[in-house]
Image (cartoon, rainbow, N blue to C red; front, side, top):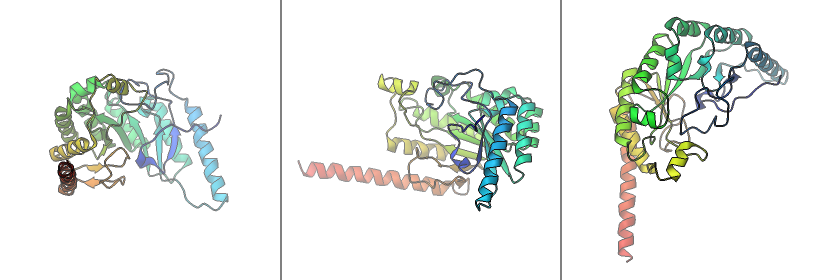
Length: 308
């Protein structure tokens, strides 16, 4: 069987080994997500033997690179696709253990996950995964407002998001929570921001990763927009929403803008800005940019009037 490459991974896993332990997304209802549309929702889990075969293939490839003069060894690995922890705990711990056995240089192994899946795991199961070497979970919060979560078919409530985040942290897992400015559109912007800040403050994740909304053809949200049922924010309104979210945060997280969907004014490194120490600097950056936009618009308007 040839090695299977997953379709996506977090930007922070750019140099990680990519281990496909499952295919697609068992949920796959989120209206904004284009990645797994067309994938089946069932029979998505690969066998332990298949995954071990991929790990062996990566080992052989690495050894071949060494023969060509490459001296490095991988430090990180990512378990794909969308929700690796949906796999039976004993199978996933076996996979993670084998991964470290074959690549003893590994320092970090991470995966995507869903809040509902975290909640189905017993605390002991999550601790066993952490002890086996799963170090970080990437969870998609997207919004902390129940109305927005329901409308985009996220499949979890704000309270469930809080409980899942806390549960992951209590198991010793590092936690990255993803949030999506613009997801409420113009109609629900305020409640989207306030709810998201509230949930993040309750969880205080290790990382908050900002992913501004991108409308993608082929998604249900795109269809809503085309039908006039969703009014997206303008780019400067998205930036203002980010500023309002940052203002409402009371966390000790690293806030990261490591994605091309975000306004390009922020550092896009994977560690981001350390809060609360750099909160004022981020707010100043947002406010300065919004003020520059306002001045440019006023100047353009004045010039147009003078030319009339």
